[in-house]
Image 1 (cartoon, rainbow, N blue to C red):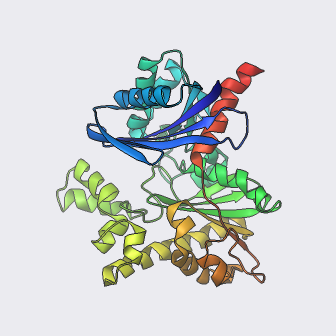
Image 2 (cartoon, rainbow, N blue to C red):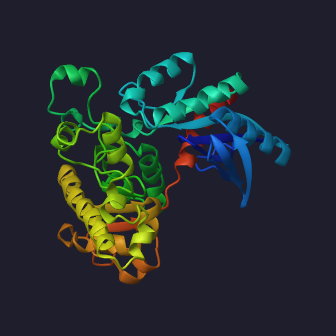
Image 3 (cartoon, rainbow, N blue to C red):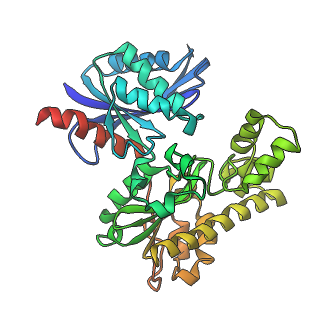
Length: 389
């Protein structure tokens, strides 16, 4: 019988999952990957290239379907633990944690800091606890990688009382950044210990400055709404815009939240789509404008993070846009020649691992991220690894 770990990434109406061999490797093998989408209605259960519709009403029911499928499909697997992507760990959780009721209570208290993500992450945890009370579960936090950011960088210029309540810059996409820094030595031994900027560019987008494998600055701050323009999220704006919408446009708080999270970014700018592939294939002026705004803010933040690092040795592109959109990488890098970046056009077009030219002072890489793998590793280490010891 093969021992396995399940990794869960729960959203409002979906659960993405991956099942890994529990072999103790830092880079475990993924045995299965899939998704349950449309929870709350006629959901689609997708795994191994197959799909079927099922009436699934909540996360608990979705997890039951997943585990029943696994039991029927591969009864040689024994699930030993489950790892969860948890968006917010606050200032208290700076490394993965074995989940118990006390940990759950702490994470519930952080819901106001991530109201669009945290409740759904925790719903999956609670659902699994009801189904299998003895199953060991581990929380892996998107914020944890950024606990090394200096106080001067994570402090807002607000009254100290708000800082004590937790109003500060946290940073997100940390599991992706941790994976990239862990994987980078396999591409070049010296890179990970230098001055690195990682560009996680997808529907959610952020940049992170890393020195000696530690985060020192990042573009997302108090919530995943801040920083770069994204698929549907606005990114950084003057806070007075929110006041204007409330006072002058008489919008409700919920309406403003919906506008900033779901009607802005590339979708709002273009009026077409928040999907970069769609925009790149469009000949409409608004699509081109949305792309240029996206690229402009990345180039500006890249310069800011290079300043925070005191220079730049390595740039890494990752996530959907970063890994596949050669045009976007070229636009970003061509305007960053002043940093010493020069890319090889052919390598870039081919999505090669290294796209910097021989004369580039900064090495530039395209590395696929694998957040699930880093969660599986942490889950093994925190539960099964310690148990076996």
